Image (cartoon, rainbow, N blue to C red; front, side, top):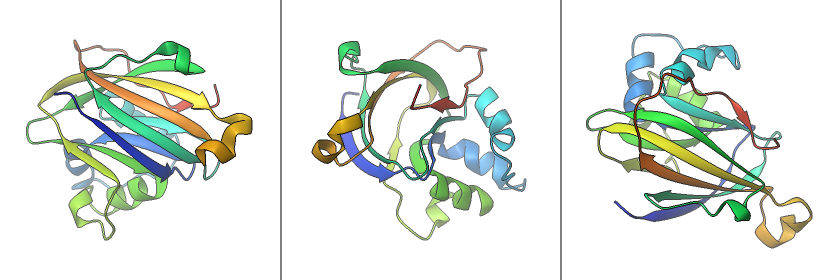
Amino acid sequence: MKSKAQIKLYAEGVLVIASSKALMSKYSENEFDYNFPGGLAELLKEHQIIALTTNEGDSVNLSVSFNTELNHSNFDNVISQYLSIKSDDELLILNHAEFTMICDDKGNYKDYSSPIQFSKSIPEGFYKINIGIKNTGDEYEKYQAYYIVELNIVSSEITSEPNQILDLEN
């Protein structure tokens, strides 16, 4: 599966990459814990979400590709995290407000009142998400964003290492 999507979003402090089924499974029966970051610990440990923090309200230009390579020289930092996708699942990319509202309302993004900017069905499996991050610094006007973020999604072996909340600044 080779494809590339580009979106611009306002992260509102946290950008979340998530399994739609994981959110429904967790929050259809459980109340959402607004405690940050503690409320996300179980989802991170079980590779059900990836959380990237930004400065409050940062604009992000984001591209998503499957089965390609990141050119490390284009980025200030490249990190890897993992995501578990179930059968008939979808990969979601959400800003902080979307994530909290969806989770607080039983975790079903399809019931969310506004369209989300990125959802994509991908085959069941375990995926390594390579994340290239570039801080635009003095070039904000050129990009109209504080960060350029590229996600490269590839099939992977299962790992027991939990995901961490990552700051785009570092």
